[in-house]
Length: 155
Ligand SMILES: [Zn+2]
Image (cartoon, rainbow, N blue to C red):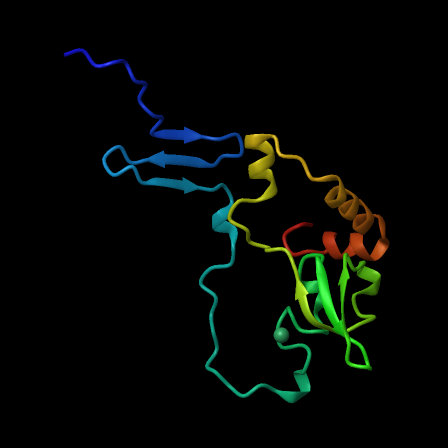
C-alpha cells in the first residue's frame, strides 16, 4: 500500500545564533546546544564551611546590600520603611541603588539558558518598548553605564 509522502524532520538544525538542535530519530528526544552556554562559571572551588565573619556583614555574597553592583541592573526591590510598611520600588537607577536597603530584590538571570540574542537572531524578537526605555535610561546615566560596562567579561 502506498503511504502518503511525509517530509522527514530535520534531525540536525543550526540556528542563526549558533544554537544546534538535534532530534534523536529513535526516541524523539530533542537536545539543544546553546552557543555560549558553556561560558557560565563551572567547577567553582568551595572552601570548607566556616561561621560567617560578622565584620563582613552585608558583603558575604553578590546579593548582599553592600554589593548591589555585582548583579545585573535590578528589576525591582522591596524596602521596609521605619513605620514598618513595605514598598516595592521598580527600575532603580544605579545612582540610587544604595539609597535604600532592599529586603528583597528581583534581578535578571546573568546565566539564562536562552538569552536575548537567541530570541532576536532566531525569531526576530525585539525588546518591548518599556524594556528598551529602561535600558536606554540606565545606560544613559554615568553610574548605570559604568555599572554595565564594568561587568566582568564586558570590557
Ligand atoms: Zn548575601
